[in-house]
Image (cartoon, rainbow over all chains, first blue to last red; front, side, top):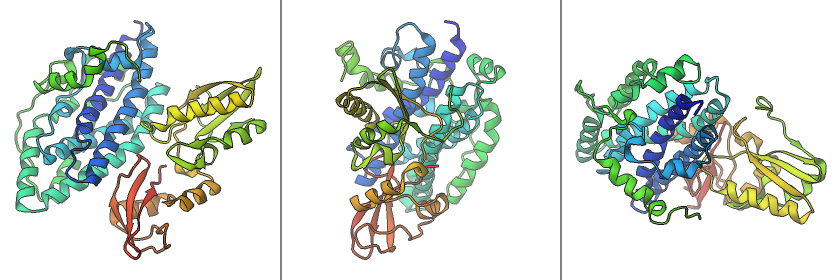
Length: 251
Length: 169
């Protein structure tokens, strides 16, 4: 493939949305209230829509007859390049929203930079996504404040979730070889430059939510290289079930 | 990529009445033309090339809209090719005045301008007009509604729950 780096780069971006979309989609029919259920599935739908744009573009670059569905459904665990954060399970509502919040703040900053990409398709997709993701970020930060500054119970749960998920935040700013190559070519976003503003914003919301900012300096990474936590395999088993059980089925 | 910066529509006059008959499957009172999703429609050798743009990336209505356009054009004697374009990104500014009225009549509050929208969704300001009794004593129930493009509201005067079409710029 001529554009292997660009292809890998697009998959890296898209897999985050795909896996997080699948996680949020699990809330469909199981949300804590009707409104939040709908909100979570709306977010899921936005993310899947974004994934389609990315994968359609990736399929075009691959140019070997693979479709967006093949890319989404027929890879093995190690071939998914999403960050560890987005594959973490819906342990409880605080984890679900904590994960969403820690990703949304990054996602929005990332897309704002991707809008400036010299690759016109990527910048067009980013232009579209940035509007949607601003809504996600508002929604999740609002919930962090509500739960953090809520009852003793909600505060304790929110704090636990933030403490546990914190360990996956540093990976967002870790650069892969494809990332570096794409930054050099002017297509990609230099994620290392987003880090400082990210933690400033996260800390601001946590403070407003009367939560304690975790001090741990121990961070996990690996997702971007395809080395995942134990949770991804189960998620993929569900995501891919129909295509594996009934190859090439279509709606 | 052509048409990178233009927000203009480029639609052959003869096709306008045909496309106006195609409605948004989620909001049947609204034609796709009033919605502003058709960006161009040009006849080339009796085949129509149509460009549509999604309201939201994940809008499931887009596939149906594409099929409906094909059908409407076929009935009018044209073959067609539908292309989904992402740039320039759709904005609620492209909903026509007639479209806004159709939304309101259907029970969906039309989008406010960007600043007012922010006041409503972030700061709890009560300015969205109830589609049932016109009162502005309304409150946000959820930032996300029955479809990606809407938020849920309730009127505190007549108690009517209704959707508000979020401003997207």
